[in-house]
Image 1 (tube, rainbow, N blue to C red):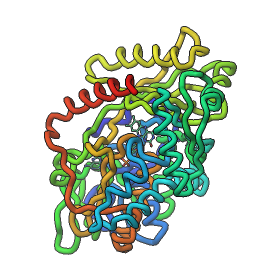
Image 2: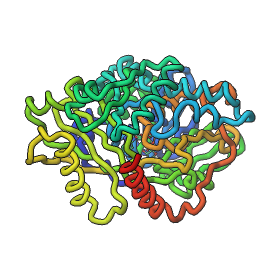
Image 3: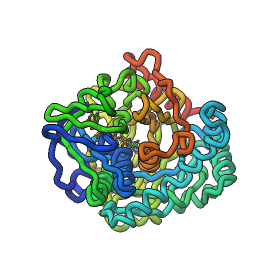
Image 4: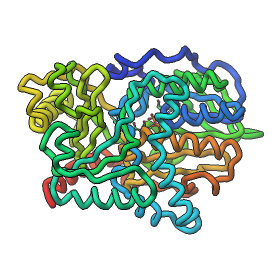
Length: 435
Ligand SMILES: Cc1cc2nc3c(=O)[nH]c(=O)nc-3n(C[C@H](O)[C@H](O)[C@H](O)COP(=O)(O)OP(=O)(O)OC[C@H]3O[C@@H](n4cnc5c(N)ncnc54)[C@H](O)[C@@H]3O)c2cc1C
């Protein structure tokens, strides 16, 4: 975690400016303290303020400084690796079992629509397009993944459908893939625009946001919790830790060890000509394929193709990712021509877990957190932010739409996380090339 300013990116260049905020100075008090101003923390703050509960957000850097301001902006109502039946089966009886698992799956199912509803309701300028999300199969054998997902999500009422090879070719503008599936509620946004708009809505509803206010310590006080920043002290009855992959080791014992921050590189081309623009993703879909070393594409509102990828090691990253993704884009979308220029390249940390699942924790009475988006946190972070807010507003934990654990899923050998990331990317590439 760093207190640097937002790095240059397409979103930093195109999102509307953030609302004015100041660091915490001196003593303050609130009902619920929220640590981190990404989708999770801001959705929680908005919900609390709209329900008449005093809430103060403390953000180490800027609004949307973490993954929320840097991601690909694909609004995806599912998890990258675990399917609904796995999610349900993994919830033990003492955490609510099948019923809780199904509630969690329903939360994920409805999460994309929640994002678009918030954008509409609060008039957020976030280039929102809810025209569907597609997952094409990169090998014929991966059509089984599409069939499984359509069956499991369809059984739960999600508007999903199989796509033939020809249909994917039409929607994507290339015959690179072998068919796939679609969820109609998915889409794309300008993620930093969404974060800043959520912040503005939360402020308008009455919450307080302090930026440049890194929480250095969270301790029990005489009545509630005491959060310390370099400039002040905040007392609160309850705390939501919404720092996810940007959790520093000292914030809460062992929380940082529940998640591996893996770099994901993002890139935006120069504005493409109208002809080329109309031939790629012509209906405005967002797309992420079945590879573990994901191919993902979407347009911004000005006609830049926004894509990216991963690297096993970060050394010399800028030149290496540029070469790698330039070759990939030309191979997948040959109509783009030989001269592909990237105007923006940046990266952020995705929060990975070993079991590829998100985990929600009650860290102590009144202190809640979640970690582990595994690359799908735009919609999920927003939805979980609301659930954590409900629990902080007094809804019993057994009634919120996610299983809440008290034992942290710490990752063995977390200190070797860089090696783990390199190994995982290598393994994904190997698997991607096989049936
Ligand atoms: C490059 C990239 C691409 C991605 N693409 C997609 C995508 O297309 N679709 C999708 O669904 N998901 C995507 N994701 C995942 C998604 O962006 C995240 O899951 C989501 O933004 C997490 O939101 P959050 O609010 O939980 O955490 P974050 O947005 O990471 O916010 C955490 C905040 O906590 C702050 N913080 C940390 N420590 C402290 C402290 N001590 N005191 C105060 N504040 C602190 C940080 O500064 C940060 O602002 C992507 C992620 C990355 C990095």
